[in-house]
Amino acid sequence: SGDGLIISDLDSALKNDHPWILEHITSYADFRGEPFTALNTALIRNGLYIEVKDHILLEKPVHFLHIAHPDGNAYQAFPRNLIKVGQNSQLSIITSYHHLSDAPYFHNSVSEIVLAENAMINEIKIQDESTKSYRIDRTQFYQKNRSIVNSVSIDLGGSLVRNNLGFSIDGENCETNLYGFYILSGEQHVDNHTNIDHLKPNCNSNELYKGILNDAARAVFSGTIYVARDAQKTNAFQSNKNLLLSEEAEIDSKPQLKIFADDVKCSHGATIGQLDEEALYYLRQRGIPEAGALTLLRSAFAGEIIEKISFGPVKKYIQDRIEHSLKNKFS
Image (cartoon, rainbow, N blue to C red; front, side, top):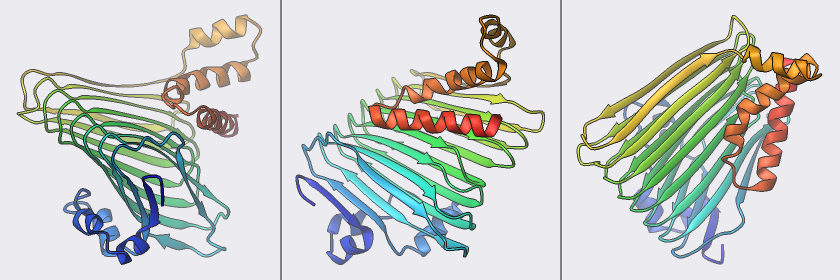
């Protein structure tokens, strides 16, 4: 704690009788119709609590490192996180998931992130876990007037992963940007389910998810943009782009718009295909070996997401991890 920032484990924060926590925890990630959220809520033991006071601009990001080390035995975890960003404040969070053991484990986490007026959060998640891990991750944002969310999610590991990302935009002149990238091979399976609820007028949302799949890997993208009757002047854009590098790889893409206002600009789309043969030929004609040309084209496909990361060292780290994953999974 200090300098307008509180970082605590949730259990300690609850013991200190923070009234805001008691009032708001479980208020945003509704468990009705969501069995894994209900399971997490029933088994809440600990997690993370972050509070940024009003008028605090944190220049350096906060990094949370999750390391799974099951000691050879399977285990399960149900962390619950609550984050509050005060008025006119800014917070950047980097959350990374890694492993030190190949023992199987199940991780079911729920995070609730609340932004007051004029608040801003930059959130980056890097999932690079064991291919014997099973993860269900739900993050629910709540935005008030003129708040900004920038969210980037990178999935490289995991056997079965489901990311549930929700936004309740309950203020005017908000901005919501979410980007995702996944690289899958073997029999990996990653689901990305996003839900953006535009409840008030004059807000913008931009969503772009991209993936590269090889072998018998499978991915699901299900994105819903909901525009309420009162949410006039909404601008909402959604896109999912995928490269399939084998005949067995599969992507199920389902972008959706539910619009009940008449003065909006909304679009959605999905593309599924292979690498551009003409681009590959162009690179080969300039003396680049086939393996190098393929890596270059795949890296370029990822570049659009990497460029959304604003922290130089983090951008470099993610770029290196993506290139390493591309070489290992597609060599």
